[in-house]
Image 1 (cartoon, rainbow, N blue to C red):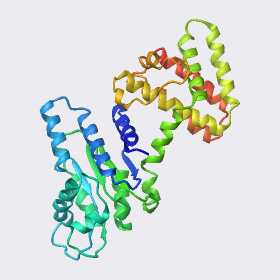
Image 2: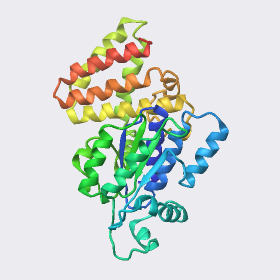
Image 3: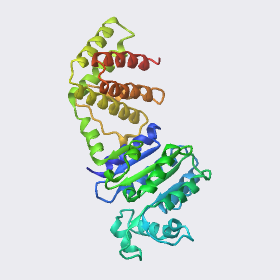
Image 4: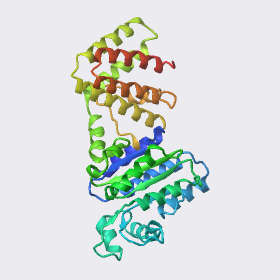
Length: 338
């Protein structure tokens, strides 16, 4: 799966202003995960900044890994030296190596660039303590502070437990991004508190949009919702639509709900004229361009939440017809500004 689709996933998250407290980015071995994450950080920190001078400074400082509200935690060689902050001690070497490699780095490159021979780098509790100390200071420029963990699976158990407490009680608008090549080696409790983004998930989202049956169902719902305030026939169509969803297989229904969330997000991006992130092309007569004009910052979150709740309720074995009826009438209300 191309890195671009993962970038789109992250950028769309920024534009929707629905930023999770913690993310796990499971890499595919291409070495592009740090590069993609830094682009995400740029978009995030620029999202609320309109001053071009500050914008340029943010871009420049992130590119040089010197932005004060960006913290990167990485594995360092084990040492018995307790007199200095080893994280800070190694940062210049690590950042220089990362910049020189165009942020396409690997553990082998890091070991080669350091002078510690066969010592295995790890992320230990001292690195987490150093991080917590830095996070106790108010942000310098941005509303957000971002912490990137490169090779997060290299955390030992002691460090992982301390990180877990930090993620559970983060500072205001502090975002943790955990980059890993092997998510199975992270604590399950950490994974449970993170939103997971990986190449396979991005591919599924992209492939999911190419479903003409789901597109027809979505189009039918939205058309009836728009027309419901004009005639009673559309209200009857909404009821019939709900009955049709009720006859679906549960897994298919959940896939349709996910499809709907993705189309709503794509419509919002199109309405915001962020066309480089819009990948949805209708395969039916659904007028996506006209529809997108009605998806705004005032209703995107509520509309999406309706389908997200539908997924949750279906997993609890609530009747699909009841779930669909709730979606149909809530969507109608939101479309008409209710």
